[in-house]
Image (cartoon, rainbow, N blue to C red; front, side, top):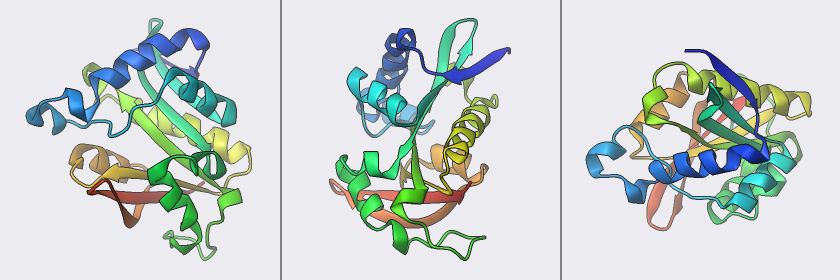
Length: 184
């Protein structure tokens, strides 16, 4: 598998929207959900806004988008209902391996991230994450936060293999989400 990891181009949007739709929880059977899913859908304009704020990273195999990952500032994410809880409480999260407490200005948000089902378990997540978090670090961010539905076990396990740690939980629309974070 020969992957190219790069920032999103406007020409990638259609393929990103297809991957997003194919992996939305509401579009999957309970059996399919066990292999991971997306909790929230974003519009074309919102993906462009993510990319303008910090980045949307895409993984391509022969010009076909097979995964994407958004990384954006905490301030940008305060507009989204579930993320406003995380951003509002950012200073209260203790991240292992650091004595400093995170601040909104030094924190970015990772996600959504989605890998096409045909490319899961092949190292795409690790490459997307590394590329996106390096961009955030280069822009001066010291901490990164994300959230995963508590029952999305596959996604949570995959992210725990990266540099993320569980730091709390939030509830939104009667669903529990695990807040994860890492230092950059």
